[in-house]
Amino acid sequence: MNRFYRKYRIFGNWVNILLMFTVLLPLLALSYYNHPSPADDYCYIDTVFKYGWLEAMNYYYSGWTGRYFGIFLNHSNPLLFHWVNGFKILPAILLSGLVFALYSLFRHLTPTLSKMAHFGFAGVVFFLYILKMSSIAEAFYWMAAFVTYTIPNIFTLLWIVLVLRWYRQDTQPAKILLGFLSGFLVFAVIGSSETNLLIMVLLIGAWWAYRLLFHRKVDAFMVAMLLVSAASCYFYFSSPGNQARIGGNPLGGNIPFSVLSSFDKLGTLSYDWVFRTPLIFFSLAWLIVLSRLSAGARNYFSIPVWYAILLFIGVLAAQLFPSYYGVGIEPTARVINCVYFFFLIGWFYVIGVIFHHFRTSKNGQFPFSVARYGVLYAVLILSIGLSFFKSTNVRLVYTDLLKGKAAAFDKEMWERYATIRNTKEDVVYLDPIRSKPLSIFYDDDIKADEGHWWNKCLAGYFGKKTIYLKNPDGDQQ
Image (cartoon, rainbow, N blue to C red; front, side, top):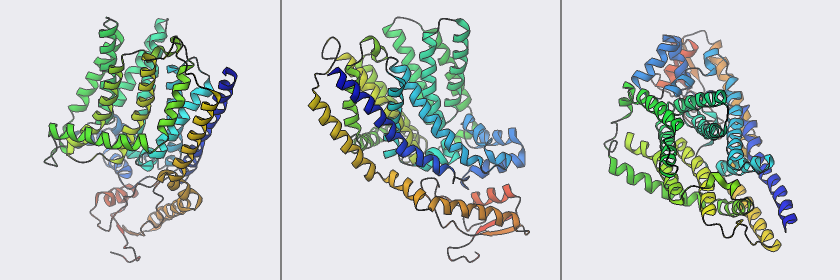
């Protein structure tokens, strides 16, 4: 049985890695065709060209939002150096960074498993994430969105890894370095968005409370993290620009409505994520892996079940709350992406906590026969295949790539840049984008109205007075 399990585990690791590459490779290939979006990407740099780098960031911080770290990244995007190709490189870096963060997290949570198993775990989560995420373009290709959510998501996982490493360090210089890096990540995550602010504050608060309640210890390191988070939150909420984002909807600021709406939305989303993906079958496979780990190897799962579940639900619902409370609307696709990401990670962690608490024997192994392993594996493969071919995201990615829609979009964009630069007049008329690969293109282009914000930003960036969008028949407006 043990020999069979080892063969199953090795083969399963390779299957998990293969699953990741079935979605990762086309996403990396699509990066080659990515371009800056007229929605916001040009606006940040146009403001820099007009007022200077520091004053441009102060303009947004004072007049629109307290997302100070997101402001910094957006005002430092590759357009600052007139480097359009930078938008082809950033998604590849982002995708690689996400896989690395997942790998690092699982490596520290299950240190006795092989590196191949850790890579396989990262592959499973990444695969499930791509299958059901709400918007691929907003997660990896539209910079104005991914600096606000995907980058802080990665930073949050890396913060957990650094904290786990801090507790294992024996030398003071190493602790100081890890503490400094952890504090920076807290500062960066809180300054990215309201959603990630709440995630980080809840994680730090829960960690500090756990050490206090169950270890009877005032953890100086977590106290330091709380102080950094308090200073970061002050910097965030003291922004005059925050008021510009609140009050546009009468439901904004309504706490009962926001709380109820958040939990209602979370219930609807969770049902879809659990029962319309292979998540349950991957969970069973995860239980088998856990059953082969010693109690000491499951040390990071040894927290009270109620505490883990409460934190899990709290972190998820808290991400939905700002959308309802701030502006009284349904969460955007990029927010749902964020919720789903932490749902997947939290789901597997909570299962580990529950198993550790209710293990069935001294070493916690399941009495699985070869036949049962085979049945589970066959059902899992079937479920994966059905989910893969039914996934809207998978079809979208492969269609845009293999049918040439992304390549056609890339060609159109380069032609658009050439038209703008080669037109000697200050008024430019542009053709609408015909090929829209929605896997990488956030569907919001310049308008026929010269006064629209996107038109002004694009015209300002290229040094033109006005840019119009022709109507769909190619006529000038």
